Every structure is written in C-alpha cells, then in structure tokens.
Amino acid sequence: MKTPIAAAVLGVSLLALPVAAQTATPPTSSPGAAATLPNAFEEPAPARATPPGPAPAAVAPDIARAEQALRAAIASFQSGNVDYSVFSDDLAVQIREQATTVTPLVQQFGALKSIDHVGQQDGADLFRVVFEKQATDWVIAFNDDNQIAALLFRPARD
Image (cartoon, rainbow, N blue to C red):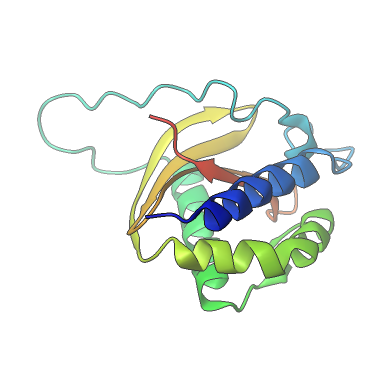
C-alpha cells in the first residue's frame, strides 16, 4: 500500500527523530533521560506472557502513565495540534524542527487501533502501537519534571 516515496519519507523521518532525541543533552539529575537510550530499539524486551485466566486487574502506575502520555502525543500529532508543553525543552525543539515531516507521517498511519506495552529498558517504556495502516514500535521516557524526554518510533518489527 505504501508508495516508494512514502516509504522513503517514513525511513528518513523515523531515523531523524530517534537520532535527534538520543543526541540531546540529558538533564544532569536524570540518568534515564532520552539521551541515555542509544540502543532503545536494538532488542526490544520480549512481550510479557499473559497467564491463562482473567486479565490482571490493574496496570502498573508508571506503565499506565506512559501509555496515557503516548496516546495523548499520538492524538496531538494526528490532529496537527502538538502540545509542546508536555515535552522537555530539548525534545520540544527537536519535534518542532521535524513537525512538518513527522505530523503528516503519523496522520497517514490512520486510526489508532491498539497500544500494547512490550517492556521497559533503561527507564523507558516500549510499546507496540497498531494503527489502521501501520504497526509501529514506540519508546517513551520521562525526565524528573514528568515531561516526555524521549519519544521515538519506527515501523514494527515482527
């Protein structure tokens, strides 16, 4: 379904945002900040096995917070009205610089279908996000001020 141009834009955009986020200077008080995730996509944590029986009653508060923030960020990209106040200053600058590429890219993924937490690495949460037209992997992490300090995505790997 993708055209070669769309695939090229996807590849360039997905490489640019992670590189920008990973090269930001981390806050000195936050060892788990965005810049400390050089291998965030190298080997995602395996999906958590769900034991047979009823679903767990609650999700860990940090995972729930990360999922809520990720849903809000995706919704803001899809609407074209990005709320930069939820991002660290460094990440907000990087996203602004790439907004004309990233926003249309996320919009072309289509409607959000599901978000599944697949693991944690170096203080960041990894999610599989499935849209109507694209499955993606996302990494989100927060700084000490509870702002999003890392937000990376790429096409999902099977």
